[in-house]
Figure (tube, rainbow, N blue to C red):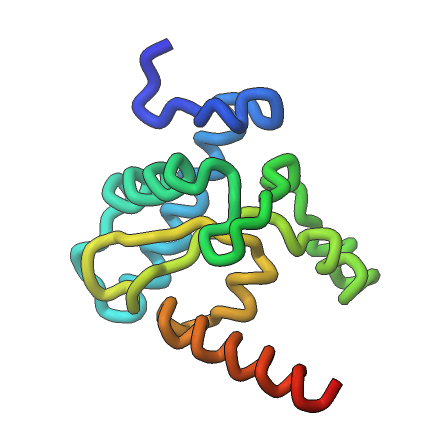
Length: 146
């Protein structure tokens, strides 16, 4: 099979090619929309798909920031209806859902890392260095008070 965005080997038993391509397309579109709204007029779906796919391959299935394995079976499984009724407990089930994290501010070239939804929520708009510094402060404080 000669696919431009061939499913990575670590996903072959968890997702099929069509599901992976749909996820990749949706993620690229969402990030392009967001970045264009931020002022990046050069963002394209094709460029973002390439960059997100490269980040998926680079991840080897793990969270870039923590090294934890991601739950790729959760792709496209999130239900807004269940989330509304179960709230925190439902979202907790998706903590290892793979998500696409911007390395920069979204105004330059497409550059992404793959991480758990939980990690992405925590990282928010922090750079990698800012995230590490923040985590060190959290651990340092926890060691003092525990």
